[in-house]
Image (cartoon, rainbow, N blue to C red; front, side):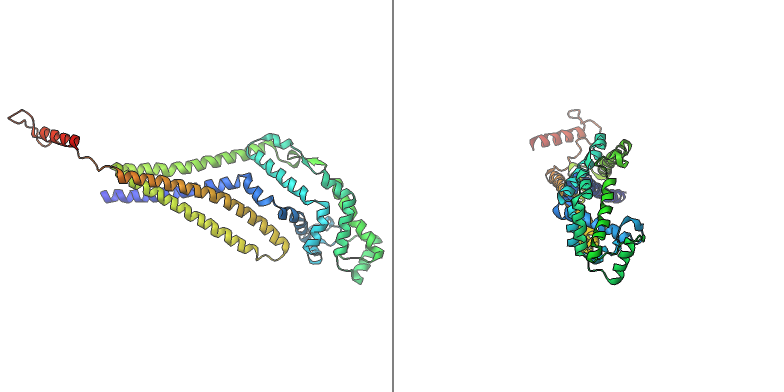
Amino acid sequence: MKWITRLIAFIIAYIATGLFLIAAVDMAVSRAMLSTTTYRAAFNNDQFARNLVPSILTAMAEGSRNGDLDVWPFEAETLAERVDANTWAAATEVLVPESWVSEQVERLISLFDGILNDETTVLQETIHLQLLKQNLESEPAITAANRLIDALPDCTFAETELIQAIANGEETRLPLCKPTAEFRDYSVTTIVQWLNNIGQMLPATTNLEAIGITANSIQGLHLLVEINWQVVSLLFLCPTALLFLVVFLVVKSLRSFGRWTGIVVIMSGLTILGALFLLQAITINTMTDVWQTNTPQERFFAQIVLSLVRAAFLQSSTTLLLLAAIFFAVGFILLMVASYAPQAIPELFEIEDSHPSPEDGTTPNANRTKAKHDHIIES
């Protein structure tokens, strides 16, 4: 019967170790994904701000192959083939300055932090678009259009005829090429008018409420965050309760208590370290996949994901290392308790003979008990 009890205790201890691991990983990932530090580390850098706008526009242009042809005034699907990334970035940087992108990213991260903290006042906080609107409606739009035209390859004879037909009223898109002097102004004007129209549609300022985010949405998200933290607490409490069950089943002394609980806690710390190495392997594997993408735009968006994964890994690994250290420290203390705990004291009272001694009227058992008591006091 004793070995069955020990087997059940081993199974319970194994389950408790797994639950401690799940709780630690959930806590680490939650802290990483719900922390603005992670997003600032991933997105608040010069490379991200410099490449964000041109990469998004190029992705939109590539998507126009199967989308609405009226979105772009020219054959945007050939943009990545005809304009190198540096030239395209220089053209868009005139319209959307890198510093402005960095400011807006920081602003959005701050708003995200407010949403997580259930601050409904962030709904009315202003997001400024005045600079972007002004650039699209004024001289920067002309500069950007000229830079784009100058970077394109010369138009073929067929493309020149197509531009002439468009100038005469044919409804189609401009070919993406550098026209002759005769049609250059027309091509530049077409692109500038398109940029002006976008600027006119943009508001000078906006806020989260204007784009459809409501107080109920914020409260719902905050509730999900709170539920997640309650789940993390519950995940830590469940294996602790299982350890108490192990103590109830097999622990008969302080030394046994220290050994059982100490070993389980240290094994939990080791599994947390194992999870940390696994997360590191996943991050490295993701980095390898990034460099297998084909186009610079795909590589940029893959790098965004990679930056987020890397930042989340650094943030979560700190939490996992701290938890592992706590588990190791607690386990070591428990094993030290087991090492220095006294042996189990024998029973002081054993009923072996209830007949009194004829000499002094006491029972033999009472005499033996008194002798044990005196021996304990002397020692």
